[in-house]
Image (cartoon, rainbow, N blue to C red; front, side):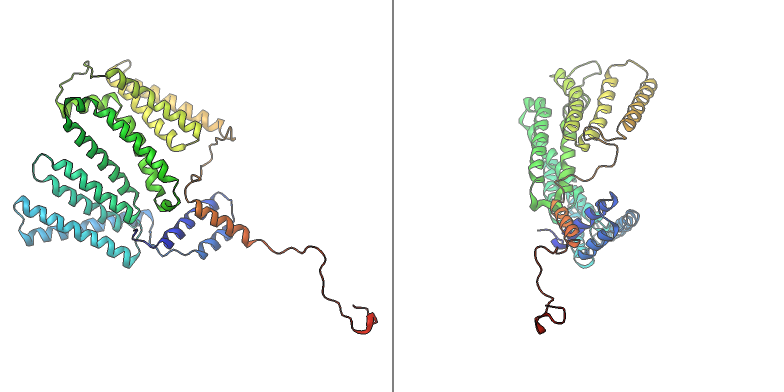
Length: 387
C-alpha cells in the first residue's frame, strides 16, 4: 500500500531510534554507528533548510507550469478552469510517485509540496461553482485524497488534513438536519472528536501501523484540541453569529451557555491532571496552551483588569511557576524530571527490540563451564610428562 519499501522505512525507524538512544548515552557512539551501518536506508531526507529551499523551488516551478497550461488552454470560464485544475492535480500526483520511485524522496520538500498542491487544486475545483453542496463535496473529496496521501506516503500532515476534512464533513452534513441540529452541533462535534481520539489510541497499539505512529499521534493531538474548541464558549458563540446569523451581542448568551462555560473552564485542567497522572507530555503541553485560551475567553466577556496589566501579571506568574518547576525537578521526583523525555514506549517498539538484541548479542561470548577435555596425549605412557 505504501509507496516506499518497507525495509527502508523500518531501517529509517531503527536509525532514528538509535540516534536518540545514543544521544541519551544509553549506547556508545561506535555501537550506534555499527547498528546504523548494518541497516542501511536508501531514502533521501535532507536537512530542514534544504527542504525549505526545495519546497520553494517546487512551488515556483509548479506555478510557472500551471500558468503555461492556462495560457495554452485559454481558460476563461469556470468549466475550463475546473478541468485544468483536475488535470494539473493528477499530473502533480504522478510527479510525486515518480520522484519517490526514482529518487527515493522521503519528506524531502519536493514530495510534500507536490502532495499539498495536488490536494489543494483537487479540492478548490469543487468550490469554484456556487451551488448548495460544493463545500460538502470539497470536504468529502478532501478527506479521500488526503487520507490516500497519508496511507500511500506515510505523511503526518496529510493525516491532519484528513482529520480536518472529516470533521468539516460531519459538521456540514449535521447542520442540514434543521434548527435542533444547529443548536446541538457543538455537542455532536465534541463526541466525534472523542471517538476519533479513542480510535487513534486503538490504532496506536497495532504493530502493523508502525510507520504511521507519528501520524496517529498528530491526529490524537488534533482531536484533543478539537474537543476543547467545540466546547469553548467564545468559539461557539462567534461561529453561531457568523454561520447562523443569531446577531448576539457581547452581553447576550447562547443556548446552554452555562454548559459551554463549564467546558471552557473544566477541560484544560482535566487535560493537565490526565497528563500528569499518565505522564503524557503532549497532554500537559496542550493543557497549558488551552488554559491560556480559557483565560482570554473569560477576559473577553468579563473585564477585570486592563489587557496590558492582565498579560503582565499572567506572564510573571507563568515565569515564576516555570522557574520553580525547573528547580524542583532538577532531581527526578515521582517519575517526573526536567531532563528531555524520550519517545513513547509504544512507538517503534520493534526497532527498539532489534537495537537491544544487536547491542547485547554483539558483546556476548561462550563461557567455559564444567570439565574441559582435550590437550593431552597418550604416547609413551606419560614418560614425556604429558597425557
